[in-house]
Length: 94
Image (cartoon, rainbow, N blue to C red; front, side, top):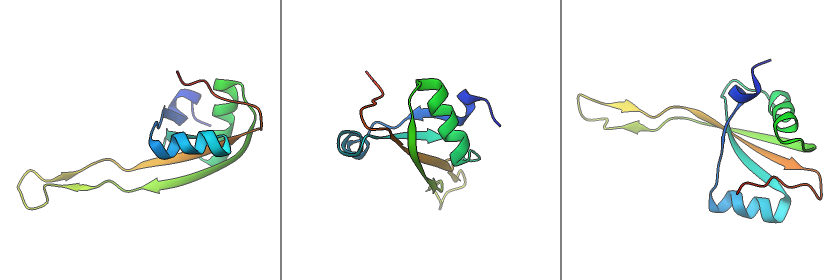
């Protein structure tokens, strides 16, 4: 198992993530691409002290940048985790 602080990189604060938090009690995190659902669940439970009901993940490939030039490259691949907490529990972000 990885270190808890290596599993969860940061929290994603977008309009969609805010709506998920308000409607379904779900929070969106940017996580390590090698992290499993079990590791993500354990990291959230230990770091925030909350009970996790479900974890969904999605992989995102990096986008190509400046393809037709000599200095081409791409952004990093990343993984997103949507974590649903037990009813009545919240993570205070601000």
